[in-house]
Length: 256
Length: 269
Image (cartoon, rainbow over all chains, first blue to last red):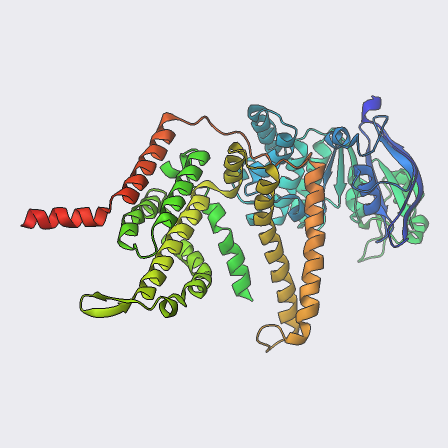
């Protein structure tokens, strides 16, 4: 299934102020994988996502989606395949109703209104907020907004879902709901987050970024338990894997 | 502070009203747009001394208020917002146009008549425009404008400006909240902070607008703002348009209050 492949080859990017945010990253993500991208603040995660989506263009190297290089010309095709959910749902929801917001993408691809309706209702069903379709997005709660933002991307039926901090600023129950939702998707997933417990549960593979370079790339179950590596990269072992805060006793390591 | 948050919510009341499902709301947007445009044309076409002729035109907004179940208060508050501008334009009329005439034994400057006529006309036109938005919604209105072959750049600008106002207001509210929490006992914002506050606001809203634009591009936005398809224009829609245009034409050609007056006095005689 090469058409769901995402390949990054020797990627470099410098901001106009000459700050080098990405320095020679290379990796390949295959169909159905779910990959967590983690790193300290300012490590280059957001820049990497913007390069993947073609919001920024690399100063050197290339990004290929399904063997097609991301350039200005190929953007419409690329963006139909890659759906990105922003960190702040308020940036993504700007129409007057949830329905119109979710329909925004399909309408831009000039689908006929019946197909648009089908896709919108399907996407809203998937994230469980079909009953909110006529509400104004700004009146929704944080969790509902996040679900609406995810639906607005799902309605475009992308092959690859890219998410920037999908569980940020959510209460524990809403966070669980979003995680269950992520589990239920069969898409290829690329998730950046500081919520390492979520990454541990959701992603099979993890890429650790440090100062614009890849510090590690491998199985989540191996990388996230490596406390030395985590510490070096400004991170820590997920809370679920740390020692008991009350008795200090060691947790049973399920990965062994 | 809470005033700004309130006005933010109030600003969106027009969007909320547009989601009602009355007979007026269900009319085709293009028909409502054309009706409003012809209404505006008739209202502004009256001479500056002709107040009596304007009175029958009050019927249109009153009917829409009643049929579309639009509350009066939010619309009137918005008219008040534009009123300083209108008063500013018209306040000098009584001084420049100082010819006088007699009304029930009192001498009145014709300038006052033109001033009053200006206020009535601006009131009617602004009300009609607000009612159009409150019964149609900005997005569908944009669609109707596109059907009239208005260039997409203008329509897009209108729609995005409308959206951008709320983005700006949210940033203002957030910044002012942060300011007021650290400046207790101050009324408003001290002038020493005006410059940096305004600068911050511009930068933040530009950033925010940039992110919204990126989110739009990622979902296939290429410059055309699609608001979904429209239903066909029905006979009923055309009847609505026809009836109003006919009424407006009658009100323009015949002085209805005078006709009514002479009819009634004729009957009495």
